[in-house]
Length: 181
Image (cartoon, rainbow, N blue to C red; front, top):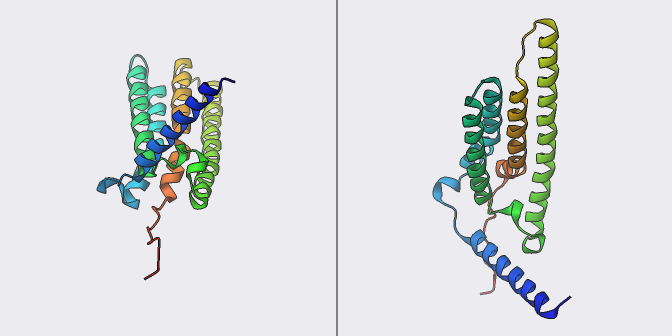
């Protein structure tokens, strides 16, 4: 490997880490600093999935508008969730302390469990749809609706680790570095 190329990569990595640390040290806006606000934000994946279900059950061009709304909501919610938790789910491990690594790992485990619940909900919807088609001749979702629901589920799953982190995350209390007099 070229030594100048390696040097440039390490310089870029160091600059990126410095920017991340600077962004993480910025104070949170007052509306975002409360636990209640973070918990309210953590419920945004539910809204995204609900928009997906609504779009899947609605017919016609309404699907496109609702899935576009869900995509915009997901993008905004993910950015705000990451900001509320000081980008803990997006920071390299070498920039975190042990408590932050533990919090992030627990959030990823909870996010995985929530993703499994989401897949279970999709399975139940598929079984219910199949049952209704066989017994009553009624469909919950048209074939296009399933595609919309799949996209909404994917968008929801991308938010789940950050939402799980925001639900339980508490900003660390700053302590003085030196107790010497």
